[in-house]
Length: 103
Image 1 (cartoon, rainbow, N blue to C red):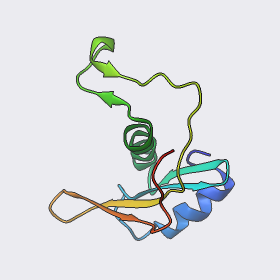
Image 2 (image 1 turned 30 degrees about the horizontal axis):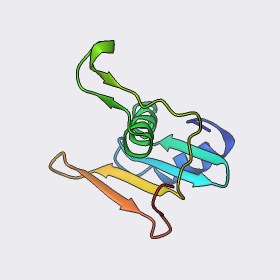
Image 3 (image 1 turned 135 degrees about the horizontal axis):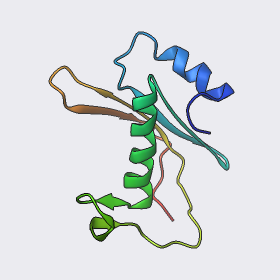
Image 4 (image 1 turned 90 degrees about the vertical axis):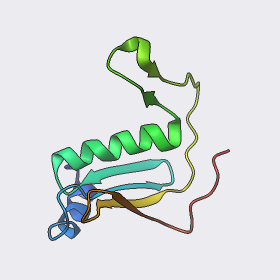
């Protein structure tokens, strides 16, 4: 589920008083929830999942600079990550202790 879904709106309301770049990546069984305080931060959630959990890399513009792993199946660990921007522009993260290593 990405962005303005029923569950996403519930989380989005929790982000009302947060930095507009705040986002969450969460798994629950076979469901993945990607939601941000704004549409832009929802996109950040998508990129975060693709980069951290699947291993995608965009080194520069253009297909020659993309590193997209070929996988028949994607197995994700339990994820409960919230990110926001710190005062000095650096990214902060809170990750649940339930997160396990990828199989």
